[in-house]
Length: 550
Image 1 (cartoon, rainbow, N blue to C red):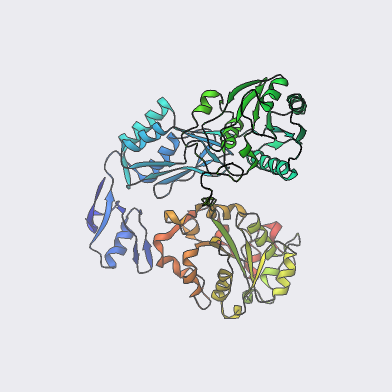
Image 2: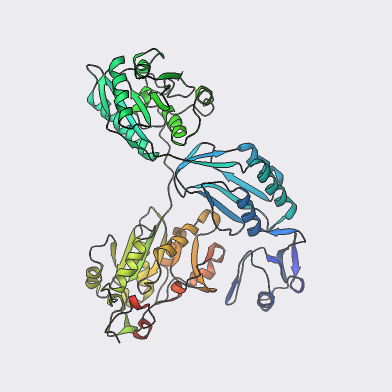
């Protein structure tokens, strides 16, 4: 690849290195320069342009990223679309991610143009969680580099594996001693239920019994008879030896003890056994707490059907120093306990539906209240589409005939936003909606109330593309090369939207922030079709076409 400043006469077919805002047009970074683009640059006064020219054997960034994603393919891991040299890999189901660091390192060490970033080994992931991201750094990669990656993947595997969780039925036996507080037992049940359900399992009705070997053994047998595929024993007192009451209860039920203790703190006193093929654990005292501890590491592997024996438990020491819990005696930081880390914040996108206008072009009808042949008003269909998407909350901006719009929506779970100045133009309704977006929302998807063909599936495509960290802070749908609606705006652009005035929307801001705009070709002209005249209603699909209007 040649990267240089090219005279315009020599730049045809080169890849533009930086975006250029020209009169009436924006040339985006990564665009392949053609005759029209070069003419526009020349008319704007440019004599040369910084660009990249691919050489024989080079592979363009998006094709390279897609090929690398294909080389890393593994069951349960799905690749997204390539864009700006990046492909994100997602989990197709809840499970445990295994990462072969040596294989990933080998790819990253092969050439500076290819990078793969992954979650840590043994990460617990939910469906659609990102597990890895591929980024091609330059505009092109030498073909022989990709050939080497693909050959290594064929010969030795991809380096990534997702082990889906099994929906196990879990039995819990709780032994009791006189004086044991009921609150402790209840906390143990709740913490266990939370752990089990988070891993797709089901907790059978817990059994209580005296803290004696025979009683614990009987409870274990009853749980097995009830169909338990994993048995947990929570003792009334800490287990201090494999010959203690809890472990011997497993033996009394016909089982055996495989290993006692682990190099994880908290969680040292876990005891691993089995009854036939069913794993049976005596829980450490820290399992009464919902905070991370050794039981989590063990459960993750059991639910993911990974081997778990003495060797696997003994290798858990690296990374096994976990946080203190309130139930541990002699916590190592009694005076100043470290605060628990914040849970990862998920980016939420609000939907803002503009439904405040006067509908003057469809007079005497109000387009939002016109009902289709099933009796559903247009605004209700638009709101239902938004509610079927991942956008939350859904805000509906009302003004003209606002009470009737509320009635048409019939108690749907939306937030109504009054726009007192709606008569001054679209910008006022938009500003009212944006001002009402909750602080926790990272973006707003602005929908028009007269576009009932834009489905929740199309809205989700836009939401999934949004990633301000990767420069995708404004997401615009396109169809056949034409830009449409709705447009998704990251929160950083809310001040610019609040500065708008008149009857124009925020589309003028797209050229100003071209570097942050990502276009998503949806292959569906629904994003181009609004219905704001009587004549336009006749072009709706038959099932949505209103009767008696015209």
